Amino acid sequence: MENDDVVFVGNKPVMNYVLAVVTQYNGGADIVTIKARGRAISRAVDVAEVARNRFLTDMEVKNIIISTEKVTSERGESNVSAIEIILGKKPE
Image (cartoon, rainbow, N blue to C red; front, side):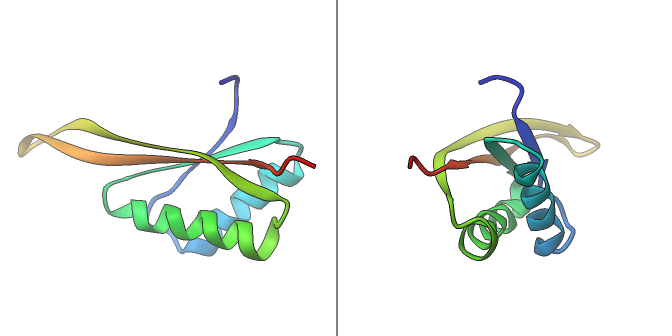
């Protein structure tokens, strides 16, 4: 993939990230990637669904990539789940 527009989902409200996705799409991005780790994964799914169903009805889920990342903290090393949801324009 080339230099796609990415929205990293964290602890803010869902609508903050939906606005970021809509802004990138309206700014000319053909593909927007939503990324999240750990507990933010369910929020990332909500962002994708709200963006698709309420605001960007001409977009669809092109791909979903799940993975596990090793994270090192003061408590040692642990595995954290990660997700990438790739949204793109529906074929006409």
